[in-house]
Image: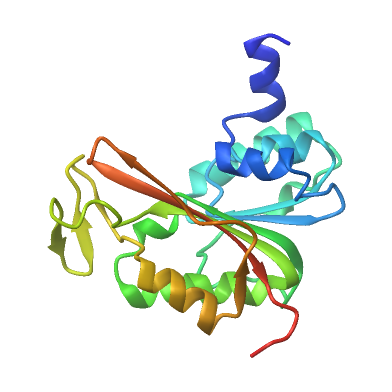
Length: 207
């Protein structure tokens, strides 16, 4: 398979999300929501393989592009599955998705309240037993090189992000009734930023 063929099949998918696919943790029967989908870089594999795919993003231009891609290449996927909106106020019924993806989205939260509102809403639409995939900027390993800007932090790479911490991860699991599917992974990049990946299972029994 050539690089071009591989890119056509996978798109620019998050490697840690691809890892879950390769581990057979995301069977083709699941209903997928990408919360903060952009132009759909994490959805190409799912579209190519007949998953029931949905996406929401606040950027109307990105949604128009994703609708165009879907309409041009995946006629079985309704363009209406890809909508403009906020992840902390989504128009979906309760417990209607088997997988919710949040890749490089929650670290744009301006404050703690907005972060938790997004988590709460993603949890609402995820069925018990479903998977929540979160990848976002973290504080781990950067404690002495960041500076607060409100409830966000300025990073050495020049960006300003809301940072997930070990205490937030613990609170997320305890307060929203999640169990880790596998260990949390944090990658420190030249001490300029750290990206953390959470792969969580929503427990069957509601708190």
